[in-house]
Amino acid sequence: MIDNNTLLSLVLLGVSFIAYFVMHSLLASLWFKRWVHHKWPGLMPVYRLAYNFLAVILLIPLLWFMQQNPGVLIWQWPGLAGWLMKGLTIAAILGFIWSLKSYDNGVFLGITQWRNRHTDSTDPDSLYISTLHRFVRHPWYFFFLVILWTQDLHLTQLFVYSLISAYFVIGSRMEERKLIAHYGKTYEEYCRQVPGLIPLPWKWLSKEKANRLMQLAMSHKEKSD
Image (cartoon, rainbow, N blue to C red; front, side):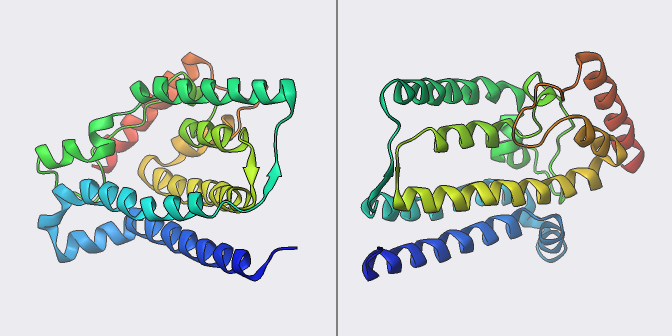
């Protein structure tokens, strides 16, 4: 049985995380950025920087509250399985660090937009299908899922990690709508050939096909510009 205090904590935490997810997706949406661009075009060079700063600042109290109210232990990896899970956690962390070179981190953080006084509502990036992206469309989400679900789980963690996993599924779909609008049928073709969150041994892109899709995406972007 869950006592009333624990239930109240879970409800408050769930509402807070859902509100955070909604805000995060709203501010990242193309229509909202276009609205800001129309109303206050001078804000666009710092939009991405402010977006990332706000995302981190608002997440800190949620994580703190989660750690302060862990709840009962629900699942603990036993014996050898525990060591295997620790190994997977370390591998996922290393994989995430390695994957950083696959992204334009200046654009991701917003530093490039600020330095170049970028005023467009879309970020100045291009479709880049790295080695990891040939096997899964969202490597960062995959690595985070591995890190989350290889831990021993208290009640609060189980609840929050389930919410985060659901948001990764929903958020990745919303993100891909923007990419399809940006790169057209080329990105749709990429989605058909590469799984979204979990790599599948039978579904991946060869290097040659990845290069062909990147060239098509570049051509589509040049025509749309």
